[in-house]
Length: 364
Length: 160
Image (cartoon, rainbow over all chains, first blue to last red):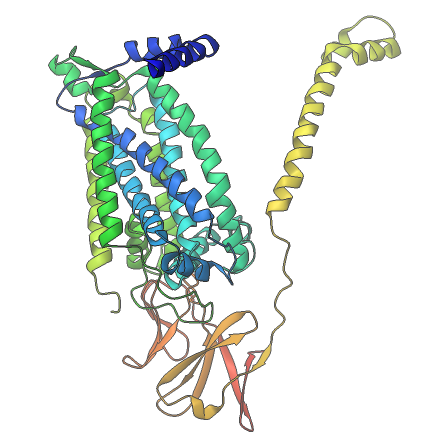
């Protein structure tokens, strides 16, 4: 009884000082449409969960990591070999990063296919594309931090790509690398971006994204609307949230299993004066672009092939961002088959090129 | 300026009135805010851009290994200033040297004895033993260096 009294008085105190009316109202009002595409509503929350895992494990890694070309590799080696559960923390960070990008892509393509980007959710879409960019930047900068051979060459290639841009390329290259070449200066720069700039930007944009999702509610796909299968809902709290939590627990179990059975590797230390090893490859989510660059001839219509490829991807990114503006029929709630097929085409392209990236013989 | 031209009174008074008018206040305020923003953003932006490094003046290097340490049909990476170079002994015993930075996306190339020419692992670029591209995406040939012998030393220098 004593304890109960304590809890009650603490509750009354907090209620008086903070006031939970707003939250209670919100929880009561928010509901989630139920139809055959409801499953896709879980992917955003799943991505968010994995992001929280990333923040937690990332903070833990900071306790041992040393951001310099001389010490980075050794500090990760020490963390993996000597520190209790160091291997686990780093493996979870590495696996959760991959899973987060994966669920983010699923979230992106499901939103595209159910046309959830239509106004008034266009700003939600723009902020989401911004978050995609930030997540890829997280992956790219984080990949370098262990300062191993694979990371070193992936970063050389990845940054060299900015250098291929006309006019501003050389300047951008120097700013991203912190000098002319990939060196310790690049490492400290990527470190600052990875642990400070990106998290701060992500929290800001994520805040906006979640606020907008809250404000506009879940989008019902136009196909469902046309069939008249609307009106069934489930309360967000507790029904949807509990289902969310089940998903998060499953994700945590998968993460733990992956980290335990397939721990993150470290490879050998980066050597700026050693040839790139055969079979060099970027993170899987950059693979389709990497593979495309391999297939492009050195010159296309007099322009360097790599430049054509890079500009092509930049254009595709821009189209992706502007889809809510471009899809006029979709905005009116009509069916827009063309966009559906373009999106499916893009998915097929990404899958095929990624597959080729892992199976095509890299030495011929 | 049309305001100034149309206002009544002698030009000087009109100018004073214009100075006191809202246009000026707006101008001062907006430039003041603009100036403040610039004063904050410029130093931070300049801070992020790394200082310009002097162009490496390396024109000639003496390699840290002797000619006997490189067998026919073998390649070795060496430091040419801050950049990597590659020295290859052809099966004919001749020594050739190139920049080892691939002209495509800057990976470091290697000599492949199995195919007898230079290869870049990153995007599968092939270069012949004159540095020319024979296959793959590299847009330009590798820069070739001049190899000279001085006693038991290998001297590599830029072509002049």
